[in-house]
Image: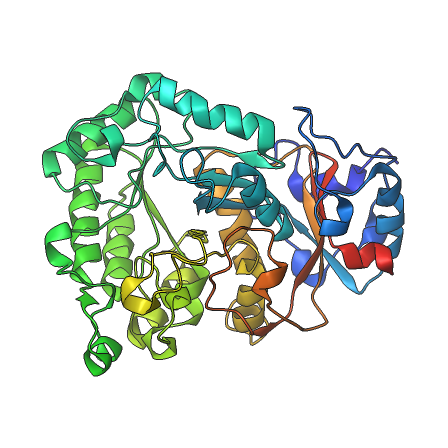
Length: 449
């Protein structure tokens, strides 16, 4: 049997699905005994960068791989494809105290991801080929998985002038001003026309600034009861309604970031029924939490905020019926100090790469709310297909789905530790992640036996 021959049954020759979910059948579990163990795999990245020690739960040393696979050769463990997250923040260049390409990609590997797309709210913003080159060089030196960056829609994400989209197109996975909504209708129309001419997608953070009113959590019952300023739902869905009309008018492929309201779901559902070329994502936290779960702690603060229970239910319905195409973490690390100022004063954003699958599997799949197949479509098949991101020649991860554990942010490989899931008991521990036939994450407990 050739090296990793059976892995191609999961990933496919190109990594893109052929006639449905490339991960079909994985809900029943494939096991390490289905695979031929490779020989030694180098722990040094092709770019020559130094690797972290295996004891830190990052890269396995060459002689450890056979031992790891042997230890995992059991029906106790399940093999899944390498996930793809089309919405992360790796903070470099400009904010390496929050996260680096290195720490972010290692965190992704620990969460079973082998491809991620970092957003352009950086310093400098990748709004020109020169600025993009800075990020690409960091990726080349530091990334342990595929890291495919966005370029900005507008210069410095300020909404006043289009970025150099022609020069950026060859290196950008898509165009986004994430962190900011494009406020001007004509600017967004011009961006969509330019993106369409370049065969690129517009990926939008939808937020109408005039409707924010200084809010920082959902404008709902919790905000009213605790004296907090609220963010209206219309600030999100109002801009989505504008953008789907512009997408319909221009023919531009359009993807909506992190939807959180019931109105957003319905607008996108109706647009799809009309044939508009629109897709969308939501985050794990919006599917399993709502404003009733809020605490006076910065780890519960993100943008968009946790909405009402009705919104959460509408998001679940949208995921089940295919209105919501992808689940993306919006992994947004900050320093401990930036997240220590409570709901009002803390920075917006939580980390999510290392908790996404365990939380979704525990809260949605195990209770029978969502099938494993549908979850894998949202984490693997659809994001790769929509964003044209092939899987590596041999990408997979091995999971323990049977034994619970407690989420402990001190174990994260991300620099950011702010998560609303701290202390949750979950099922689904990633034991091994392989990208392009190389081990990029190994749980240190595997080698300890």
